[in-house]
Image 1 (cartoon, rainbow, N blue to C red):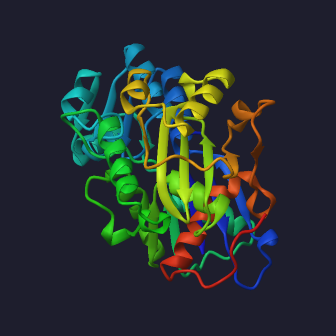
Image 2 (cartoon, rainbow, N blue to C red; image 1 turned 120 degrees about the horizontal axis):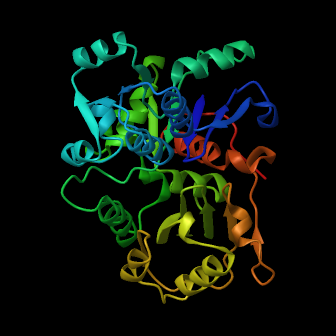
Length: 352
């Protein structure tokens, strides 16, 4: 089985093989597609060449910043509509930012005129398959899973608000963590990025499961039926998820760039005490906070993510889960657990 966790900074890949010990499974931690696309755009900017951006909708971040820098340099930036939605759900806003939205035929003509052809998509399946083949890793998988952070399609309002409403509903319904994953054909229509990410894996011709990076990290860290607090300090987002008996009981979501050690530690304590509101977090540039009930004081506090150093503070008793001995595999391990619940993986599960 192939599990791919799409982050802002890295793409974390796990190939699970039933006839091998989990510690021997192939693993890759490579630059995210957003980071790779940003580098391609940056190279075109340095060469003073136009850019054509085409392919499926993907996550923003580094690629969006590179686009803005390219336009600010006075250089043409063209994009097809699906790729342009990477930058904003409102194509008029994308145009106002200096991106010229073209159809596929027009985009191809610009490429023929020496524009740099930059392909979008959260997963470059061709490159991944080539890398695995070069390492003699079997690529004839029987199932695949992908996690990505999707704000939801919201052209007329803040997608931060739309995204957090999904969390609020899940907490209010006390949903099991495994219910926050979908077969590719059942992904909610509003989750355009997640649908596009799952579609990147469609050429494999196998069942595909998809979900958000937050639940994937939680499942990978604690399992399906455990109570715990998980803080996933990512390159772009920080998410604190509270699970009680495997069901969602609370979520705090902020942007990592708005936080430092002191602010995050204080915010976390206040959130777990029920003192933080969505309005407060949103006013500070984040997404929101919702807590179903008071958090038991004896729950383990698990911290993962590439920026987990922000919670290495003397007076917080934290644990750092490392599925298969590798903290960066927390998301893929969670995808594997979700796949077992959904009947797509019959093999071993993470431990450690």
